[in-house]
Image (cartoon, rainbow, N blue to C red; front, side, top):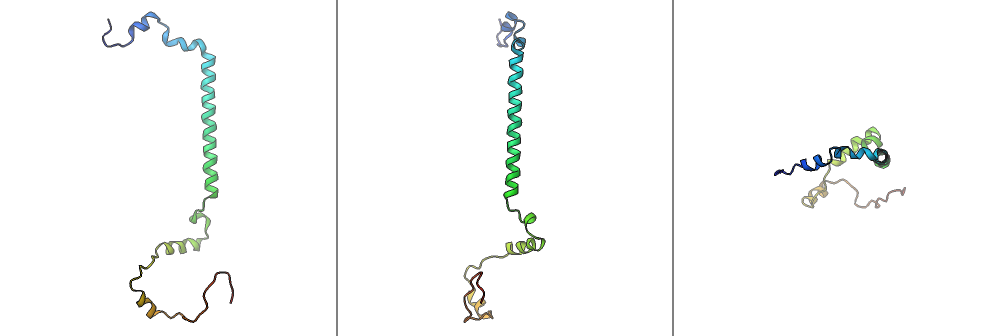
Length: 108
């Protein structure tokens, strides 16, 4: 009697049970080889996808000239005013209120 159920009876009935896979060794080898090739193919596809994304992504440190990176850091430090204290800014402004409106790309 095997109270723990370790499977000892099954092994005793067929002493070569753990080696039965060798009966179909060629099929087993082919299956493992196909799995390895599939995994290699997926790895290559994933790597190509990452390289493609990297080429298409805009990375400021890499894609901007050196001075532009510094300007971008300065821009990140800027914040938008919440509307309080805008009268103070207007009183100190030296902009011309009668100037034409700025339109990008249009030369005056």
